[in-house]
Image (cartoon, rainbow, N blue to C red; front, side, top):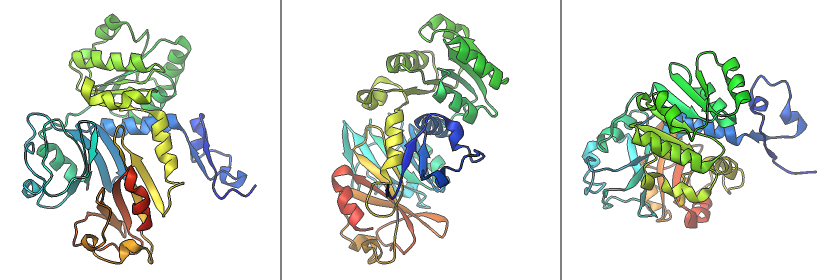
Length: 357
């Protein structure tokens, strides 16, 4: 009927397989997304980098957006960004957002890091280890994982993370247990209710490196992760349906709360934003979006050096990808045509940011 672009949400992840025999483009479907598939990808990224509470890749990992919480042992606490620049001599990363007491801040050189801040960095791959050192964190290898819930998200997660890891899945539905056991001979499947603390203790939850709760019940997932934390599990991830819970993760002690609908919405937003948006990330509980734009030859963003652009104050240009090479930028850099530009912007400034592209 003339729509310029069509996007379909699908529950069957087999449709997303490149080997699928159906040509959906020919049928008129431009993009297909699966919230369950997207949620499992986010879990996979968080398992790969255990020190971070959020992880988002641009251009297959050439640039990474990561979130990390500042505790008492963080060397940067009570120091300004300018004062910590010596700890980043190769300019491999840049702080682009701070969540503090429920508010979102766009950091500048004189911004001071405070205890309890949740910092979002844009980083080149070598910068990830530097960020961990800078914030006093410790990256631990995740080998033993317990997953509560064997539904679509649980099964997709198993598919992505099972290589070189020992996985236990706890699921109360016997049919799902049989399906998982038949499909994956290298994992242990336990037919039990996730509410039963004794079962989790019998399955040595205290020996797990990570606990992932992805049942259909948000409260069950949250309570199970809190219990796992109490048992000494270092990395906990809970799937929640209720958006009101998203801001709670750091306050209640769970490392990361994820929401399928929000992840799917982020994936769709890039198709409705003005300007040539390649990808987009909206961090849970963070009143800002991180957008990746394609800079065109006649766009305003290429006209001057970054410091002379009069770019919105509640937005920041963090990095670019030029001819396949990623770099963190500063005020003396100038964006060129065909650069892919990663920008963080508070929601109130997004329309102004879009005008530059």
